[in-house]
Length: 335
Image 1 (cartoon, rainbow, N blue to C red):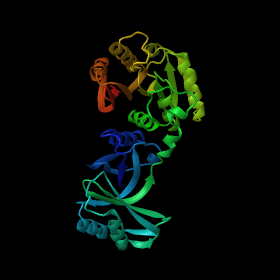
Image 2: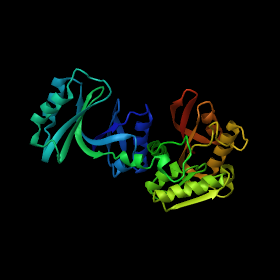
Image 3: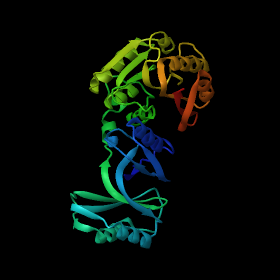
Image 4: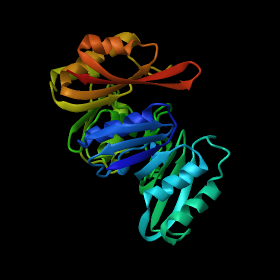
């Protein structure tokens, strides 16, 4: 099956990485055919309910084809695709940023609609033919629209327990997906705080474990998990570095964002040492071949620390939070 994802574009590398990691998590065989700006074209044997899992995409579409962003080429592609639909249809063309400004999306929708065999219905179509003006023009049929509104409903300040500076739910979901965790597997956040990662992992069906050195955070995290309807969880007040004594080769995935802000508490431990001792513990408690996603300020030599602990670095992403903080998101695998 040839498909394409319309990516959100809110980060330069994370949306694509999330899709690929999510495909791995469902055991899909796939290969990337094209990587356009905010459009990822793939061939895969399955997508299952992937649209319910990914957060940094807008849509999943069946691929008809792609061509140069030229009106004549687009018309030719549409004609050669021989698109037939059962029931009514509408055509929608999305422009990525300011690409191909000379092409009118409204005119293009009309011209494509004239070629398609079927009944046009603009208000409530049964089928949506989806075109994207990016580096090229990509044409397909909408399979699934990603429901991004669900993440807005559980924004941090709307949950029972709130602390400032935490990740937004859609970003937490992306980080969870980067761990390749599957439904039913054991997922850990050893610095659980308000529970953002645990909530997203729980909502995709993982059994979630969380610990924090502060009892207030653990109590607040539990309130948030219950508020989100998460029932399959275990929380404890514990030092992340001590988990190796209790959970050797136990977890299928780890995602965590240890404290490093000005107001964050590291209990007097130097930041580099906190990461070094924590990641050494992660290596002991993670199952062989499984992944962890660890977040740090870019100034922390996280890659080297992880490699020295025995991990393989799978991928790295950088995100500017503000002038003085660039966040590093590192995916590592226990070998």
